[in-house]
Structure formats: structure tokens, C-alpha cells
Length: 599
Image (tube, rainbow, N blue to C red; front, side, top):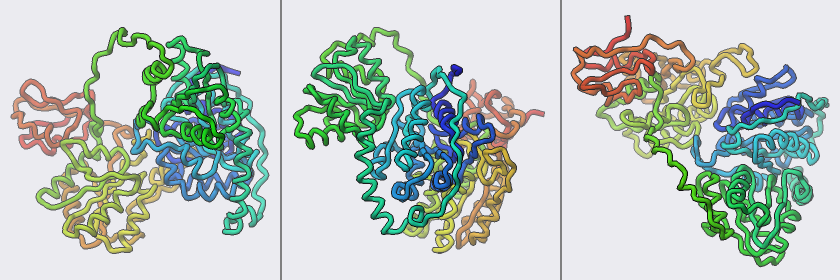
């Protein structure tokens, strides 16, 4: 045993290794990314690890391993489960042989996501068990429990950490012992592994009979607990349990009420919940994000004829959106318990933080790509459909070059819909190299097949930049550290039937603008690949400077680019050399030749 300071995601990874996981797949997405990366870093050679092209592929690879008797885990964020939901729903009926954990990190806030969706709903929808840890320490042990339950009931299980747990840190006693789980191998059985309507019907009956048994099992699961006494009760789960505990301590109300902690909300531990109800008159439910526990408790009251007032999100006692906090819980518990909250206002209030909207990094090649497209289309009716990634930040002023953003790969298909509604519009679809492989390819095939005129702008910076520079099929490297064949984006586009494909360096503004103009004139699907590496993975060039004598303070460099490295000085533009990476875009647009690189 050794004590280590671990991030929640690291703790989950080490717990999975300790549980004997053999195959780990996933697609990077904050806040889940570090789980797979830690498995790769700590891998002693006994675990196969891969970044798959998307979450659907990742889940299916992990399922195949579990069919064969190898414990597997697949990682993603909450919106990634939307992509993986097709195989998830069918896998719930098929089941698994070895333990399989589907780790889906939710993002209350949201801090770095398109949605605040709650993965616990997917547990009910897919009829799968779900585990909801409250601390990194608990996550370390609970991930092993998840594998055990998966094997006991031969079903995949969901594991739902949230952002604060994923990225919070704790000192954890770790065990280097690894569970010895021999891999039996795939045993052919079409009645088991082939999903036919008859099989589905038979398995559906088994699932409905099985889930109440799991719920009863969960009523005695160590991750769930019932403490305290009184006529008022608080039900909570996940990281909110820690917030509630701290708030109760601040109110000196420990033990003054019943406290129900739920780490497994599906199948719901009904027996434990009924014990919680005993003697209560009023309940407050504290949870992120949706009223999942709250609805289950209300359902049980109706089912068993229990008269009880339940407060939470449904009666607006608790906020219906955003993440929770100790301060928020303190306010709710103070009102609920009728206790005076400590005077938090007496604390020294920090100064207000300056407004700092997210922007493209100084030197980012995407800035040049957006700028040249904007300049090439000046005076023309054009719509710029964006996508998920660093380049979503192209919506910021002064670029203002992202008119739509829905989900990964959707920029390509949304552009097609806009074209069909407004044929006289030039429709651009921006997609990154990693997103191209993730879900961009089917949309391009759709455009070619249906002869929909769009311009696909592939912003190829040779990495998955937004989530921390993970490899993808176009980088020539796997997560196992092996050299792999690079998949050529230009060759794939041509193979799909895109006849006009040009590759340009976006930092060459004239070349890129000319290529964009040519692509816009095509009467079929066209593509321009702006290929320039992310500044975080390439060696920076010498920084640029402003010649004060030549600078007229016209502000063109500031107003047109919005580069964080260019600032307004005392009557002149200046370049912050600590931020400048020497991309040279500003030199290309300065009308007076006042900007230049170091000699």
C-alpha cells in the first residue's frame, strides 16, 4: 500500500488496473480524458489501450473484448454517449461475459460542454446499472465494484463521475495488487451474441426480472448509506454528498436529520429508501443535474401510499441548472432545517475577476484560416457552419466566423441543409482533423451522394488539440506508442468523390485566399485543407515586433485578427513577446509594413 496524491480520473484509472482491466478504449473529451491517458501511462504491458475514432467504435471494441472474457472499460464525456447510444441500447439486451464499465463523465455547469445532460437518465433508458462516486477515494474502490457487479449480472454498467470529482485531487491509499482475471476467449453461441428479435424479446423479460434483484442488492451496497435521525431527511448522491456533509458541519447540524447517500440510483435501492422514509415528515433532495433521485423518491411515496413532502428541483427549492457548491447547499439546508447559516459575507470577498472570453491562442493557424475565408468571401452571401473543437472559438470577435455549432461533425451536414433552403448562399463547413475522422466522413459522403454544393474547410493542425493533444488516425501514432500508417485526409476526400481538393498552408494568406475563392466557384462539393501544426506541438518561431516609426495606429492588426499577443500600447500597437509564436499573420495584413520578425 502506498499513499499518492491523485486526480479523480487518475484514481479511477488505477482502480481499473487494480481490478484487472485488459482493454481500455475511448475518445477524448473533457472531463474524462485523463482516465485513459493514466491507464496508458501506468500500463505494464498487460492492458491494451486505444483512442478510437469515435465513441461508438470505442464502445463496440470494448464490448467485443468483454464478449471474449476480458474485462474492458470505455471512456467518454456525456455528449459522447449520444454517439455511442446505438450500440449501448443493443448491448444492454445482449449482455457481456467479463466485466465491462462504460465511464461517462458529466459536466455540470457546463464548464466545457455543449449540454448539461445527465447520464443517469441513460441508465434508466437502457435499463443498465449506474454508479455515482462522491470522492476520488471512493471512485478508486467503486470502479472495482462496478466490474464485479457487471460480471455478477453479466451486464455492462455505467460509471458517472462529474467534473469536480474528475479533476479534484485527494491523497489515496493505492494497492499495486492486480486482480488475476484469466481471459477465456470468445465462445461461439449465436443464441447469446447475435441480436435477433426473438433473442431481444427473451432478454428483455430477463432484464425486467433481473433489475429489481440488482436494486435489492444495491440496498445493502457499501457505497449507499443511511445515517442520522429526525423528522427531516436529506437525500443526495455523487459529489453533492460532500457538499451536504460540509454544509451540515457548518450549520452544526450533523445527526440532526436523516441523511441518505445514494451511489447507485438505478436500479433504485427501494428497500434502503423505504428505511429512509420511516419517521420522516419532510425531505430535501440535493443532486446534480436533473431530479433523478427526487423523482424516484416521489414515485416510491405514491407506490406505497406514503404521505411525505419532498423538496428539490421540481418545486424549485433547488436550482434547476448549473453545478452545485457548498455555499448553495448551505443556503438550501439553512432554509430547510430552519438554522441560521454562518455569516459567510464576513469573509474577505475576493476582487471581481476580469472578463476573459475564450479566444484562439496567439499563433493559432486557425485564426489565419478563418481570416482568409472571411476576406475571400467579402461582399458575397455566405454562411459559415462550425463544429466542436478549438476552432469553435472562431466565433469570437473580430473574426465572427462561426454561424452555427451543433455537435461533432454536424457543421458539414447543417451546411447542406442551409444550402437546400438557400441555394444562392455559399456554404462553408469547418471541421478539424480529429473531428473529420470522428463524424465528418459520413456527412461528406452525404453531400457527394446528394450532389449538395458545399465547401469543406478541414483545419488540420495534426492533433486533437482541444482535449490535450491526443493522437488520431492522421497523426501516425497510436495510444500504445506504436508507429502507425497515417491516414491521408486528401486521399480520403478524393476516394469519397470530392474532385476539388487543395492543401494549403493557412499562414500563407495569399495562397489560402486564392484556394478558397476557387473552391467557392465549384459546382460540386469542394474541399480546402488548411494544414499547419498546432503551436503547442511545434517549435515556435522567433517573435514579431512592431516598428513604432512605421506604425500609424490604424489598429488593423487588432481589429481584424483579435490575436491575444497584439495589444494597444501608448499610441501604437505592440506585440507581447511572451505570447507571440511568430506565425506572421499580422505581418501579412499590416498595410504599412510596420510588423516584422526578428532577424
